[in-house]
Image (cartoon, rainbow, N blue to C red):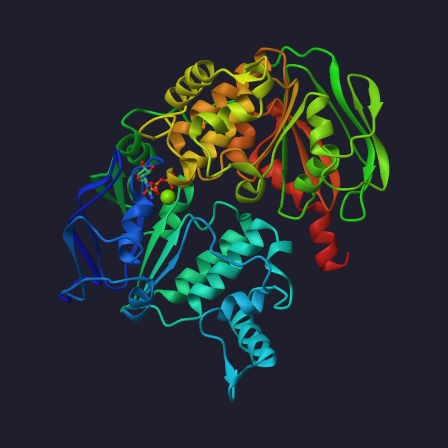
Length: 502
Ligand SMILES: Nc1ncnc2c1ncn2[C@@H]1O[C@H](COP(=O)(O)OP(=O)(O)OP(=O)(O)O)[C@@H](O)[C@H]1O
Ligand SMILES: [Mg+2]
């Protein structure tokens, strides 16, 4: 038998106040696809950062092809054939797609950098990977999903033997997920291997051969990916059973609090109308590009509209910015958490309290004790893994950062809450808790909009489901009449006629 591609033995890594990894073993065989799963903060990304040379282990050994190695840094890891797509995208927003792909290895013609060659190299690679992306587009103008594709293209532009993907599908839609899976299929040969991190349980049997579970920084077990029931994996992860296939209890709805009439924007909204009542959770489903995020941004005044009216509690308002929306009691959690969401250099407590500072301010003084109490409570409830509420958010794992942002909006005193992809990157246990918090908000009379690309989540949460396609609302379904199939039918309706030209 050939030596494993990767063998990590007895690996331990600590940060101030945190034992991130405690005596962890991990093996990847040649030709194997290994899924690495665990709750937020379980240590998955840290383990992969040891492989990519970002961190050095405090103890333990790493072998490649049976030979011990000390990985001195990211460049060394690349030389060893390890290519990693990190959870937090590492792209430069002000550069183009092509420039990002070749970054660090720019093609030269003579002594000069060649812009032409950069475009050529990128175009060839994007074609080979079957990605439809404009190499000249600025990365910061792309959606999160498209940025992810650039990151993947970049990782596959070098000769890698081990490809590590840290939650690559968190921001992708169905079609992009399928495209990614076929890229992975093409990448895996008898001499290469993939380590795949995800919180989307349903994709594990499709993408992996074997599943390794981490829990609180330790090995919690290994299972066959294709034959093991998912609830067994979930209970290894979170140590308790999570109910699946739950539907919401019928809503006790009150008055219409938000009414959108004929909202259009230059791109891509066409006369979108809907109503939202107090006590209700309205889900928005649709393919990427269907206009869900654009609709949310138009409502809160983040993007300009060309026509239409937004009525808040029955009165028309000209909402020119999210700050104006907030004053009208409309809270908006953006899908792009890095750009708008967490203030990474602030503490957990400050982040949770920031959007509701008025409440904690007395005569200009912020009441630190009150903030800490509220924050401590939400940290416990959402199982935010942190040594304390005074920890900087930047030191939390990706999913725990997202929980902080969700906690901040849940805590904020808004009558109308619009959440765009609230559980992206959040583990199954904490998702369940967030669903319950959203239900509590609705039960307390708030009106909630949830945009989600995960159909099980839409079905789990929404009393009604608006399906968008091509910038329009294609259907509004009652939860009782909705299934994944009916939603997809509406979501692809215009799409298919457009493609077939019918
Ligand atoms: N640079 C750092 N400084 C302090 N603590 C850190 C640092 N990096 C990670 N940690 C802590 O180490 C633990 C493991 O984090 P890690 O990012 O590996 O989790 P994860 O399993 O990838 O979680 P997620 O699913 O949320 O991405 C967490 O408690 C995290 O807060
Ligand atoms: Mg992580």
